[in-house]
Length: 276
Image (tube, rainbow, N blue to C red; front, top):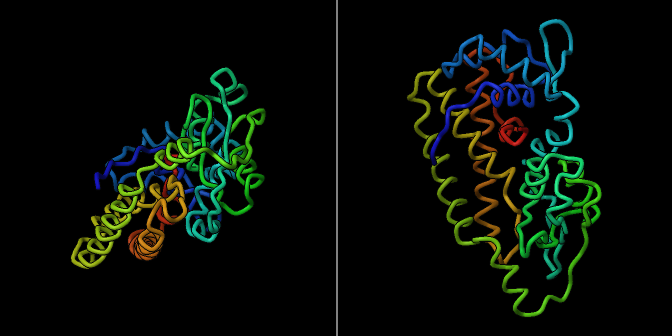
């Protein structure tokens, strides 16, 4: 797994998503960013830009909370722990989104539109037509609401597709590489478990930094996982990966508590790169 150093805005959003009281002080943000070699001036610039974008707002003097532009997306990111419980058996139907290019981002940016589709596991079957298996809790109504909260333009059609012909069914199932997903579930579970076994020998600052980086990548994978049903993926392998990520998240929380008593940039916070 390739680990990428965090940018200050991503780390700040992570800290806010994980903070017990949902607020973050500027000094706390500066202290956490220093662990990754991020200078104070860069942190203050990031806070100003996040505020201008509506992603954070002042809670009180010197403290910030998530802003209105982050609300819907933050809720989706924070729900990774129970995402498995929000799936059900698949009966062969598909949820479709028809978004021809002329409608894309009509009231939203193209980035918001494409991100919403990706976070709900939708893939493009034909130009402007995206599909996913109908195996998410709440069915098409639930998916529609989640897509709108994530930034899909509300004029976009979201509906159920049934009885594809054999060729269409084969094309739809081939939109996802199930073998690759299964391999990633196993490989990344093993990597997390091996890291936790080695971590007691690390210096505390090294352990905190690596816990953040590994956790960020693993939980981002879950945030953007398509949550496919069997037989498209190995459900047991995915559940084992989710369990490993949850244990890693708890492990990372303990490390960060030992370090500085900072708001914890693990858990619901990870995947905050999705916020921008």
